[in-house]
Image (cartoon, rainbow, N blue to C red; front, top):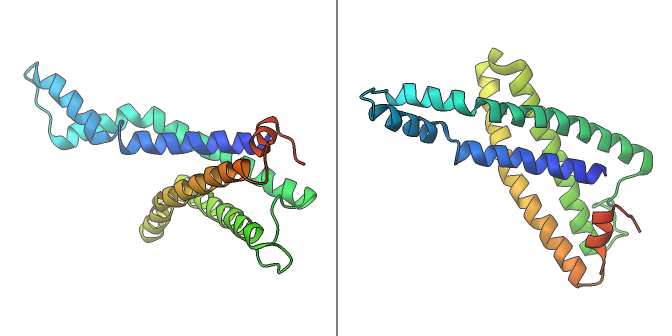
Length: 182
């Protein structure tokens, strides 16, 4: 259950990022508003149109922030569960696991570290904000760049599941969907 809550929240956050970058980009929305107003002989500057676009997408972006709070909570719960039950992946530095398991474990370890960094930088942006402009800029850059590890992880995760399903771990996707560990 925890895996799916994290996955759905994570994907929702990525959806809000995509919407902000593309379909609901402040400049795109601003151009649509400006074009509509221009038909009524009302002219807007590009800056005013972008400000309107920013205001229109704000409720959607607020859901990104709320989903970030949820993901932070789920992440902490996941860490507590892993502390109690043990990690769901092996130690990638152990010489006692196969190369395939080492790679898989390394991917999960990097994912959890990167996710933690994304959540911490997002929390910094939201709670501490622009108190120190230089630190804020670094935190925002790191947070924005986390999109790339997210996409890489999703690609590796889905590819790994498909290869496992087609290979020696038949039924892994069904077990994952039904929440069973074997």
